[in-house]
Length: 216
Ligand code: G3P
Image 1 (cartoon, rainbow, N blue to C red):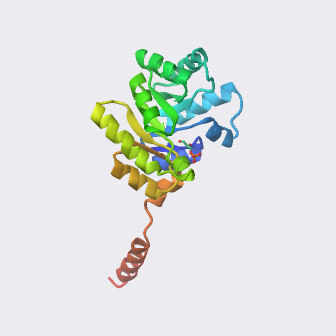
Image 2: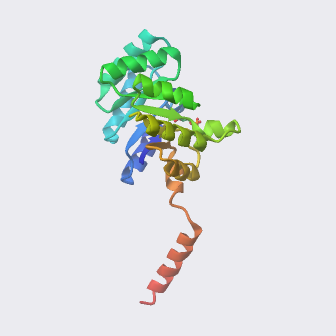
Image 3: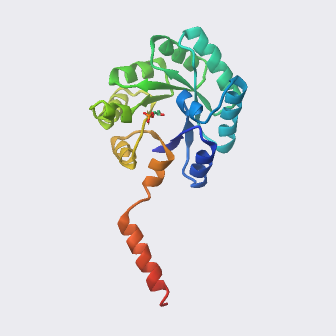
């Protein structure tokens, strides 16, 4: 399972990259706004800056919601760097745009996926990745990890090549459960990635080892 970081914060991207386990980055307009990035040129430069830190897929989301707009925007994003993946929302024109990008060998990440039916449609259109938002599903009293399992089973049964990118990860346990369910990729906040490190018995055990080492 590959690890992406879900942020537009360059310091956090650098910190995750320094761990040596980072495979890619996902962003969205909310994450870009959180970093205070404003204006077309600054947004484009920010994507390039991210690509210069991480050698792996970097999802950049279109703002347009019509087919022509998504294609025009996606072409510009894809031209920024070879690692850019054009992120397209799960709407009718989005499906048409994903098919267009697939036919033109441009990678896509179909975002805002909340059902197996949507994931099937994204795969049929040729999406490179599909992003079910598991934290937001949990927020609505459904089980986000169950959806990941269902999509993984369907893609395996049907032989779809689209990768399952579990998104809206909120906790280290989400990462573990997505690994069990067979997700291809998880995209997580830095806190969920570093949260995997934590266990009180590790801390206690290390403290004891260091204490005993003083008597050596
Ligand atoms: O990758 C999608 C993610 O950014 C959404 O996360 O926590 O806003 O549901 P969240």
